[in-house]
Length: 466
Image (cartoon, rainbow, N blue to C red; front, side, top):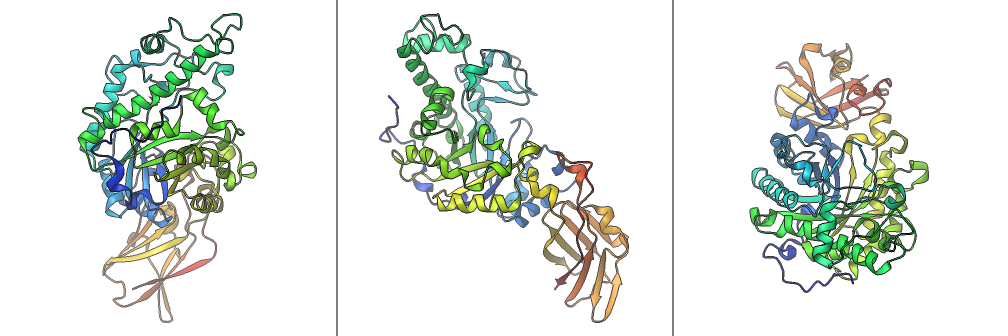
């Protein structure tokens, strides 16, 4: 049986009073500040670039809880962006600063996997307690508006066939025996074994339920347990995440079976303010030509499973727009994705990761805003990072007043990320115009296509400075 009863005792920091928080609504984007694109520039410029692209919130990808950029969080918030701490539940790409016993937390899979990701078991009580303490400390120490644990699931889609399936190690074996009384877990490799998972179906069903319970108990303990996130900060928003996949009418049941994911039961256990459906890799790996932005309509069965039990919980949906170069998605695709999400009733949407979208490789810089914070200073914002050398070339930036045009000397021009800054006490006091041309972007800071020629502004753009 799926435990999805919404009638359990509410946590004192439950979402009832926060259902209408503006942080639960609108277009957002995932940002991993460890990428090179975010280096060698100010935090303020990163926040400005996110604003120029029309987002209202950021999911700050915390790769390691021991390494968080406070200045960037504060810069986002200063610009009115809502900031979520997005952490991974089932492991980490970095174990720097972890306690020495971290190897004992690891899952065991049917076959060893050495892909640079350390997979931790929710059956490890030490891991669960450590993660709970780290996340409680994270929300106490940093001014995040919300926190979310993405990827809390077990591996993996089609994992039994491929050997990428777990946890089947001693931690899981001991917990299964303790909770269900079975001396052995199902066998996944030998069809002649009486406990082979396709033969002993009763044992396998207990195992499936056991895995769902493990995922949801882990999340509940981290968020609602003694010394957990909500005890540390009762005001913080909490989001849960589960996967969605277009794999036919049995997709919901197959994800429950293979990865321990039951979104309705997860929401019942954790009582989040928001639940996200994350696009699974068999879908996001498809190139743009094979994955129209309407693909999330095939996730309606996941929405229906949630809505049958939780009709009012706000929902979000996530896309991947560039984890590999073969499947990058452009700006029009992302905009249409957002429109479809809104039409389906999702409160919010997000995508991984901001600087990985196809627009980064295809679009030339475009001025999007002009500010004059001081009489002798003008800041022109672009929709992407720009190259300082191109901005300093003769004729790139000129002051236009009446019939006169005065090219600005390079020493008056500087660049900070996406912002072109002019500093001069000779600027006209009243309204004037700037003529901008030949500004280039920065392939050296991209993840892919670093050797591609820079995209350069086409023609001339005139902006008004007041």
